[in-house]
Length: 185
Image (cartoon, rainbow, N blue to C red):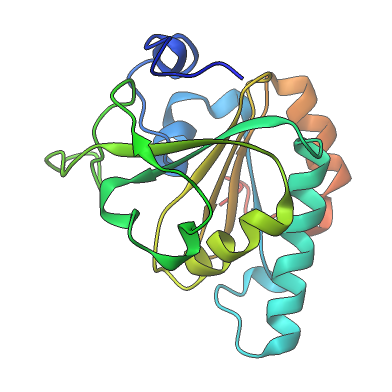
């Protein structure tokens, strides 16, 4: 795997000055974006174990369709999230090649991102996904080989594929997980 510390232009070449956060990537790359919902009828938060099972299974299906098992990836998270237990098992280092974290478009940067290189394995990602679904942390997975970004949020995930045609194929494949809204949110 390429170490971004050795190649500080890795992130800017792919994403410019855009933060690796779903809403920011969506604004910069709308032609590559689609969103899935974690639960049916756009229900935002799991209320019981059945909801958690549904949430985990949807994310497992979608993430594994986008990122092959063992594929080289990067986990990125804002500085404020690094101490969360869900990141145990990941060696998080400062990501100087990534723009500083801004919670919203008008916000002042509040610190840098941290990253970890790893081989894709949904089981390792599941604790992070659970923490994101509980609004305890933020995280984004970037594939090393493709322009794929998987940015979960507390109600689903913003997904970015290499181009609009591959996005359209995945949207069709996972149509049952999409919003009924015309804007896809």
